[in-house]
Structure formats: C-alpha cells, structure tokens
Length: 191
Image 1 (cartoon, rainbow, N blue to C red):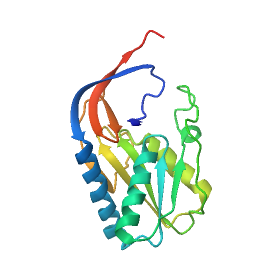
Image 2: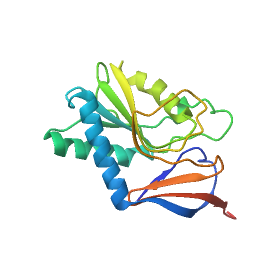
Image 3: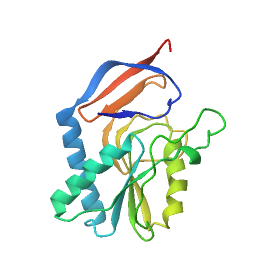
Image 4: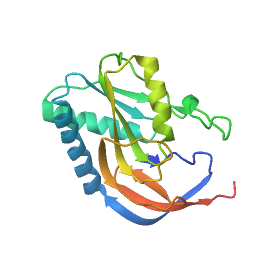
C-alpha cells in the first residue's frame, strides 16, 4: 500500500517513475522506530501526547508511530487523521477535493499534538494543518514528524522529528511507501 508522494502535485494524472531508491523497508522501519524514541524522549513520555496523521501520506506513518510508542511505553496513544484540503492557501489555484475523511475523535486541547506527514517540501501543507488543528481544540504545543525533509521551504516551518533529509531538485518527486522511499518523476498518462 502506497503512503503517497509529497502531496504537492495531486492534480497530476500519470505514473510515478522511480529513478533511485533512497530507503528500503528496513530503513523505513528503523527510521519510524528512532522517531518514536525521539518523540518519547522529547516529551518525557506520552501521557499528554496525541498523534495526528495528515491524509493521505501521513496516516499510515502515524499509525505505525503510535504502534511503536505503545510497544515502547506499554500504553496506547490517541491517533487521529486530518485532511487539510479546504485549509490550503492554493484552493483557488488548483483543483482541491478531500481525499480521505478527517477523524479526530478526541479533544486536542492541552495536548502535545505530533503532526505526522510523509514528505515536507514547501511547508504549505503543514501551514494548512496548523490552521485545521485549531478546529479540534487548543493544543498546548504542536510538533512535526516527517519521514522525508526534502528542502525547498517557502514558509518558516521546520520538523522536530525527521526520518531522513534528502536534498532534491524542485522538479523531482519523493514517493514514500511502507517498503521504500524513492525519488523520481511523474510521466503523464494519456487518459
């Protein structure tokens, strides 16, 4: 099951053509395990922590981080999923439609919210997520965990927890899956 690409080009219809694999399944697994330990250490446990995965790419990563945290700590952590389609600042510039439902069945007030996404690129998706989170309460703080930080920021947003920093060109795409992270490009389909 794909975790998706960086989300910056959802309007493109085509096929992702991988040019190079930068992380294999063991690398992804180890990165998620390390990130879980970093979240625990940074927050001195998980008693007031909630995980919120961004749809669609961050959702599977959020689930796996929550599983890892529960295994380490011996207790469950609240996990929710957030679609930021209607909070984006480019809503009039490109087609925007929700991909998956938002599911946050708990109040985020006074929680440390760890937003989880697959790829951090320009920072605009995270800006939208910060706006959206406030509809579910007023968190004590918000932290950011991403599998890949590829650079090219347009906003002053920085992740707290990173699986891997991968310098890329602006025209490249990063495809994060449960079993790999690849760099490549889309080839348009004839549909």
